[in-house]
Every structure is written in structure tokens, then in C-alpha cells.
Length: 91
Length: 208
Ligand SMILES: [Zn+2]
Image 1 (cartoon, rainbow over the protein chains, first blue to last red):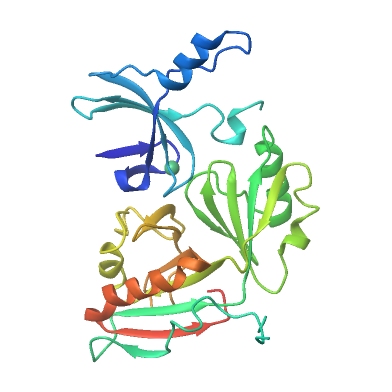
Image 2: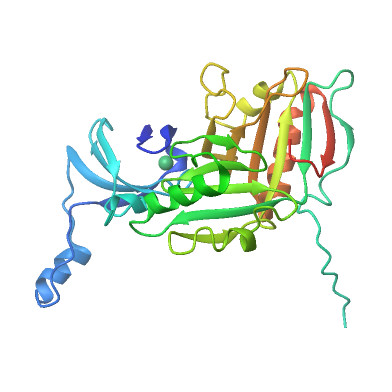
């Protein structure tokens, strides 16, 4: 499997580290215990297209959001994760 | 009590043995460790990448790299190391962290890497063939020309790799920055990969 880093280009899997599901959003501070439990522990086990966070630690050290089909490993999109690259934030 | 020596030494001081190595005859790979350089990591502060780029242009007379490239200036090399960040490689304190401090005040954070990396220059007929064993980057001259750079890994070790100016005899030069504590390990891996081609080993204080 190869991932095309938006900053570096196409690279081998060994340069990347998998974090996991990119969908969960941190709940508001007053959202309650169930929402926090869900955010921290509960994950969908998706068989199909999934949005994931990957880290290009063996390269440019940017966090990426990768859209990948977990059945075929086909990658349909790679974009910088929120905050990756100082210019993308608050510029 | 033990005597401590705080002399500045290269991380390859013990591993590097100058002279020929591996197969005999004409050396296919030339390895030169470059010592005694200044290296500063420049990283834009949040939302300040534009300001950082302007400051870099004012300082160096050329724009800093925004894509994986190494750009030579009159007295430095600016090497892309990731989004909104680059390395400044120079000598004799011309662009040391002290010298750059005021240049990037407010726009970028600086980190002195002068003694945190080893710099290895690879050239020779078989340089590409040797590097191809260690790197998944396409180093074909059509793809990786003079000034091309990559933040990548070799032998599970993060490296900054770029193609410098060709040697006087036309040979391509590949420059390699590696973390000091990984330098000896990568050095031995490089020697293993290069041995079949014959190697000539040396060190220099000159930035090519
Ligand atoms: Zn990358």
C-alpha cells in the first residue's frame, strides 16, 4: 500500500503511522458522560470507505486525513488534517 | 571520578574510517562526511508562513522552498523539511541560530540542529544503485534532478535527502542529513550496501 502525501508525493506505507477513525469529534465540555464515553471508546468497525488519520512520521511529519476503503485498501483522497501546515490555519 | 571529554566530535568519529572499503579497484561509491556546519530548523508560527517566507527572501535573496526542494543561495542551502518549514545549512556562523534570531522574530520558531545531525555526501558511478537499496524514492535523473529534496526514511531512519550541485566531473551528488544518534547505524548500513561497488571514504569541512 502506498499513500500520496499532499506535501511529499507518493510514499511507501512504512513511512506512515496509523492513528484511526478521523470522524469522532470531541464533545462539548457539558455534553455528559455518555458522549465522552462514546468519543473516547466506541468506534464503528467500518467495512468500506472510511476516513482515517495517518501520520507521515517517516517523512514530512504532517498529519493526514486519508479516505480509504478498508475492504480493498483503495485510497480515494488524502488531505492535510486540520492544523497540518501552519499556513492552513488562521492565515 | 571519571574524566569527561566535552570536545565537539562528529557522531561518525568512530564509525568513519577514511580510505578504501569493500570491493577493490575503481570505487563506484564515494562517501564524504561533511563536518562543522551550521544547521537551523525554521518553522512558521501558526498563520505566519507568509511572513516567514518574506523574511527568508529578505535574508537570503531567494525564496525559501515551499515544495520538496533544496535551494542554493550565495552562502547557504535552504532545504524543505515539511509544510511551512525548512532547514538552513551554512558555515562559519553566517546563518547560525544567533544570526537568524532577529530575522525570523515573530514569524518562525528556530531550533539549532548543528550538532544534532550528521551530513553525508554520496556520489560516484554507483551512488544511485547503492541508494536504491536503501530508499524507495525514485532517484532517476529525470525525476530527482539537481535541487530535488525529500523528507523520507532509509533503513527505518528519518533522513533529509537532496541532490546537490553535480561534481566538477559531472557526477551527481546526493546529500543526506541524519539524526546524530542514528548516524553510525545508517553509516554501517550504507557501507554494507556500497561494499560490492567499492567505496572511497573521507571527511571534509567544506560544504559542496
Ligand atoms: Zn509527507
